[in-house]
Length: 278
Ligand code: C2E
Ligand code: MG
Ligand code: MG
Ligand code: MG
Image 1 (cartoon, rainbow, N blue to C red):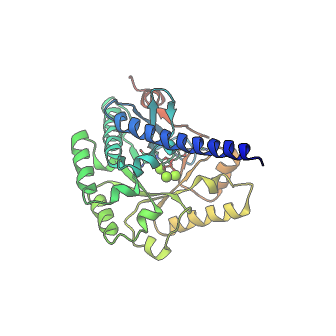
Image 2 (image 1 turned 135 degrees about the vertical axis):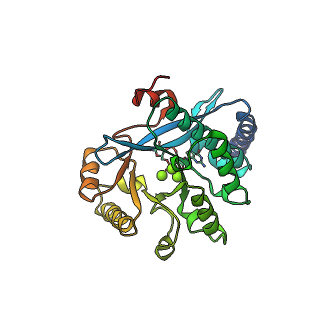
Image 3 (image 1 turned 90 degrees about the vertical axis):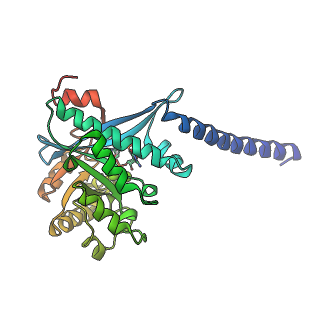
């Protein structure tokens, strides 16, 4: 390696690194303005009974309609929003929008179903989550029974001394709680028994291993049996194929969320699904 090459290589790497740092900085600045510029969009993915005929709920999933980059998926900006302290504002927007859309759906003569909203772990620090949810329900006029909050195992099992109490307080508002991506982080089974939750969501990585990996099949069966024995509802995420449906039917899984029946869609499209006038 000549001196020249080495230098070029160094320049190349440092430019690349600056570029990513610059890009991150730029994306942060754009993210700060995205709320006031109304650039966020919610998509809704229906959840059904095992036969796929009855829609029993829907999950709200955020996207960012970026002025140059187009529609960005949540994993492209939610972690950044968490890092730069924007997740509380975004989370608040998501919650209000989801509740308001669901109320709107009901007011137009659509079905009365649950909307599920994802919570970030960061929304649990600070004491205002319960008040924020209460206020949002009041503002949107959505009955609490039609709201579900999705938490992760790390929130549910976290070391926060007051998590248990916060979850109890949330549930006392009349809403339901589910544990998202179950099986991917860690759960203490003895604590799970005492957690005030209503539903377990089996992570899509296990569902996608059905008919490919006996390991994933065992885990899926186990999570279904565990949920049922604790009197919890259980929903399979990421269901895409016939063979997955057969397996889940045989194991008596309650509910399905996946591309097999419905992909996430805009609110207007959801109204079409329910044959409700826009
Ligand atoms: P999640 O909560 O586990 O949401 C389910 C994800 O799986 C969604 O991805 C959905 O589009 C995708 N999915 C559903 N069915 C299928 C399927 O059959 N096949 C495949 N391959 N994928 C399927 P999405 O919308 O990209 O969201 C990714 C994650 O971003 C979510 O995972 C959630 O953790 C997070 N997220 C989304 N919206 C919000 C939000 O408003 N706030 C926060 N804090 N996080 C959010
Ligand atoms: Mg979720
Ligand atoms: Mg998740
Ligand atoms: Mg999930």
